[in-house]
Length: 351
Image 1 (cartoon, rainbow, N blue to C red):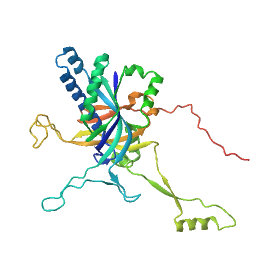
Image 2: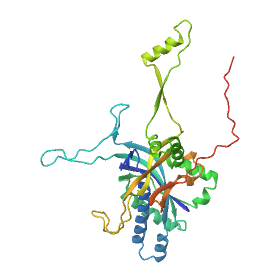
Image 3: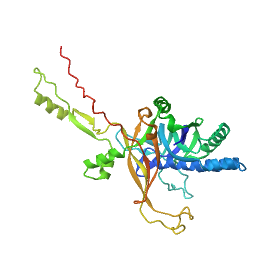
Image 4: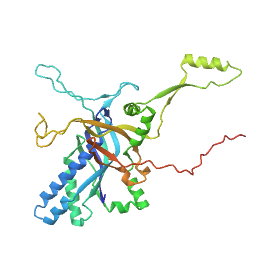
């Protein structure tokens, strides 16, 4: 990571809100896919703008986007909830009737509007002079609005920024905090695979049950403690009345602090690699084909100013050759709790 390309406050309409068997936010693969597609489009556009400059073409081929950070500022799901505790339903469009006047068949789609900031880790842009950087920014500004992000249309955004010498600058604590605070207000998505592994042990090694435990809200009913009053009925009678009246207190059971949610982070092979053109009805007959299934993990939405290192923000591709898995990995690590912190005990004040 030598430079950062910041695409601030991208307004995306009708983005895909379904990721595998989860819904609520696009999968991480869609943001990394956008980053890779942007790299290819930029290279092509820069070469078309300056076809005769050999030195410029050489520097363009060296531009590589290594990963991206996802900061969400606002979301609006196309869904509704009839009652406070009922399931949510997607708000779908009505298709035109068929020639027979019947309702046309359609596939259910989950859509959402969102406002996000993408911070892209880049190499190959650190040696640009002022003129080349101006050209790069101009082409970037023209290319981004023409692309789709998670299936949605980019309707607006703020001017892009390029930060050079990022690796050296973020060793400065002041510059580090200044950059992280510039991403506010918003929340950055990081991986919490460590929590999933810890929680799996509580379920006897069943990773699916452990993962599903984070897909729901669990409340526990507890009886309200009856007030002891000698002039009124006894405690036992008060407790019995509370049970008959349903006078209970519901408490949310949350084992881990923070905004932790199930997310889709990649794909795993389900079949061997087939030769190009050997699979019928494949979209691309010139590329090898493999059937895959989604990989799920846990993610946490955190305020950027709580991050200890800027490198913990970024997601990047990781390929496991043994299991043929394409995984989006994130380097976030929970800061250790110092051993010398004393556990303060608050004593009640007695007059």
